[in-house]
Image (cartoon, rainbow, N blue to C red):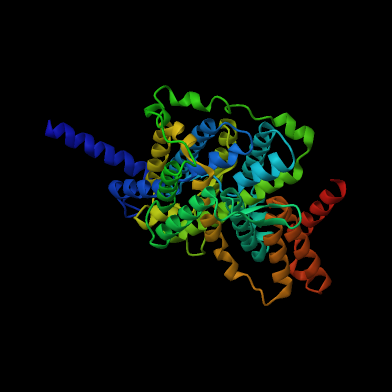
Length: 450
């Protein structure tokens, strides 16, 4: 019996070695699995935050929970098996807010049509990756705009979090104002912000997830939300995959073509592209996977996993799927191969049974996470050269116009237009290139034509 068990163990090790090249990467199956668990815990908050954002778009909350889990599991599985990187994927923060508040609410489009736009953006991303046009675009976008995009999205997400917490409210005279800081809902959100912020400051793994759960408990104790009524309100006792039915295959691709949503498609594709590139390089650098030139080998495969994940996610019923910087938590635990990603994928798949739990999570519990994630995304602002006005002005326009127009797409438009024009009128036109000129012309035509 021991010989048979030993043989099976060797066979499994050989299989893992052939697929993930563990010895070459100087890692082990145990290390990779532990790293995968760590990554999942740090990013599991998206299972609750994404449905709460999509709820405002009129999408059923349990269905989007299931769609989030299934799409994250599938895309991360592709990343692990096809690209062999320890990078997890899930619906992206920022793009889900753009989907809900700018596209569905702002443009008054059905969420089905918005999902169709997500699918087409994934297809465009796929074609850009295959034809290598992606490289031309990435190389042509000025560094200051790359930095500003992430900062602007962070400010946009934080603004949404403050609104959901009730800390910022509508005012007919001043547009926005401070909310009632004595109201129970706001006090619960402030509690969540303090607790979750403390956990993040102490670098507690899964701090965002723990913060959501702790704030939810407090909201139940204070009567802000309802407590569970039984086991069925926490876990799915029947087939969990039935939960995704209300959003599965409900995307409307023809509706996108009828509306002619070029700027929306551009925003989805463009932001996803740079979010992915930045995350892949950041995680790759942390894991020591970059080559001598600072490039990530097999980056095309990693981006392919993203585009496939985005198309699959839109079919399931969730916005753009992208790589998660939280993958660095797993890398810090020693994760270097796709086995880390496979572990994350399995855990996302298992989490589907907790779909009913999302109905117990109030907006006051997820709002602190939005504010803190926005805080983390603001970090790149220190690399912007504010002592050079031709760099500072387009950076400022990109950053400030995203939250003030409630649209990532408009922030991109003002960023590119201001960069190209100010470089041109100050005689520094050589710092422009074909990409900045083409995109600026397209944005100007968009504003003229509508």
